[in-house]
Length: 199
Image (cartoon, rainbow, N blue to C red; front, top):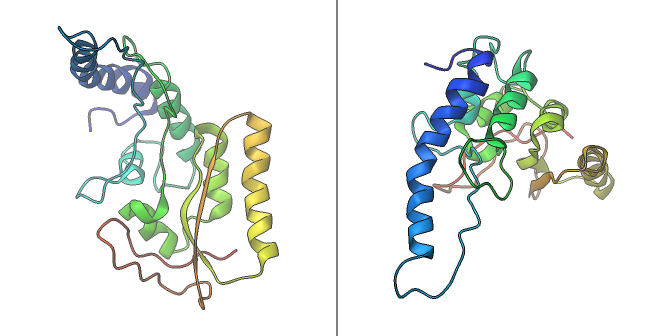
């Protein structure tokens, strides 16, 4: 709520994120130089935002609290994702390593799964957002389909990755004997059920 406008992402959000991470960094550094310990070096941490399945754990839902985003995947989503990513890559006083980005795994984020089931997001919209934050296609349920369909989708991800010189994920979850619009049946405490994407 305190960071409800895009302009506050690069100030309030960025500073608050750094403040939360500094004590963790201090502990990690103290462990590495502790008395009697073998010599080791703290290289840094990855501050990536990843959803949880807890109440209020959705990254997509958090983005919808920004004033310019009425619904994730619609207008304002790309600029918000870009600001979040830029902030995560430049946290003051934090040693950064790894991905340092915004994670949007559809079947691990309740709001994303809801939007996908309502057909309010698709692979094209997710790839558009990937152009600014490096998500790719993550935990996307796809139907039992021709290899050529999967190849085309993977090539789209690879092309964006090559064009912008960054890593993108491509975790496609193929459900045997299924078609677009069927529901997944993971029956897992770590995954959200979602309608299978149309590819």
